[in-house]
Length: 603
Ligand code: IRN
Ligand code: FE2
Image (cartoon, rainbow, N blue to C red):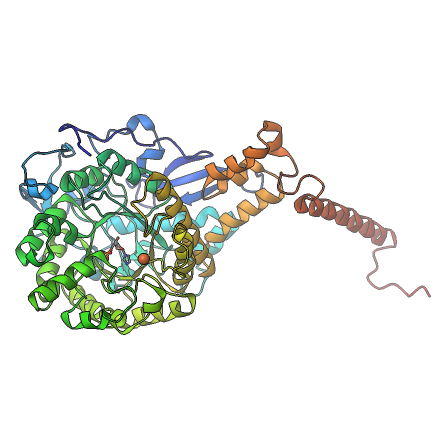
């Protein structure tokens, strides 16, 4: 796929989600912070609107305001400028950074200009360091308000009870305050991924005492996809609710593509730096070394990547534990590092250099996502010795990273049958001292390629309920091909369902307000409200319109699923009306008889 040297990303999807509008609200005492929400207008006299958490950025606001070449507005710029970080030149970009040796630049870098920063030694840089120092940052205030106002979706009385401190769920606080976010960060139970070179970010928090988050993977491969497709996948993924996006590109234009993504991303962006390092050494794992890896970390940290997957837990001694597995090592990063270890018969250099990695990540506040390079790739391999040996190493590394002031989450499986999921959560909490867990599914059966968004959403819902903080989506193309735009939407919506189901089961105060609003709309035959409240309004409307397309059908007291005579909702409405009439008649009779509670028996 050849790109013109001046290739720019094509148009992306803009404009509001149907039936919703974007609103910005400021937290109390912070009129300068504008926190985004999606507001669904309802035809319900009881509650005329529902506010939802909104990850979509300015793309769902005003189409005219989007200029990809200029990049998004930078809400964090003023906050970062006030922190006294060091201004830097940044490392020069070389041809091999883009994945080609020729020197020819196939895609122009995103031209948006901005200052580059690095933390100085001895000053707080990471959100963890600020949290430990008792400092509540603007990022924490912003993230708290997003979590919170989703809760005020509930009624006014409910809001009052929240403000009064009444608790709804087991561990979940009644009201998320900035101080609560700070305390969770300081304890290592949550992370706020926010590279100091990503000023376009709308900050968010990942931890099990907050809403369950969803990550969507995008990125090209050597065989397909260019910058226009990937930037549209980013915009499309966040439109449907992806909380973070990982750029897993392994093809050409890797550096420039990432700059287009970052400068246009309101969500945290994650990467696996090992993939680009491997490109730089021509794809031969044995040729990897610390110098090329360090160079790649700095390059990506300066660009503004918010979290890195680092496969430092694949230790030399763990590799033999995988030889009798049905599916061996299925993690890309894990297999690269296992190859390196065996080629040199040496300990994983990511493990040996872990302190050096921490020092780099700390200066830019790049969060760790400790990679699960030995996750099971089949049900037969779930919860085996290799997987749990690596988990113990990830626990050890978590504490090392915390010692450097770095934020940490821990990656988890993979392929795990339902009855073996709980053990994964319990062991992760114990081994990693409650650092947030971030899992890929897990897939609960291996027997449905083509439908792995479903096999894995089942596992994701379960592990989210048990306490996993973020769910990495799986698309219908898993195991079969690179996901396209449609697969991205299917994957994100499937995972929003899993995350929302987990929020409900955890007793999240606002989660059920959404379901109740939808159920009331359904029972009252407010079809427009039912579509608009859906996690996927376009599909709901299209399915309804497929058989009953006329405007008049939007208030009909039935749909084509059962027809007018067999509609249970219609029948129960009639039942209720009759029962009400019956009750009214009885009440009238009671009043007529004099209103005495006890009357003498007639017989
Ligand atoms: C998430 C949890 N476990 C793995 N993941 C994701 O898998 C990880 O964040 C990355 O997006 C993707 C690829 O990882 P491997 O195959 O290189 O380990
Ligand atoms: Fe798999």
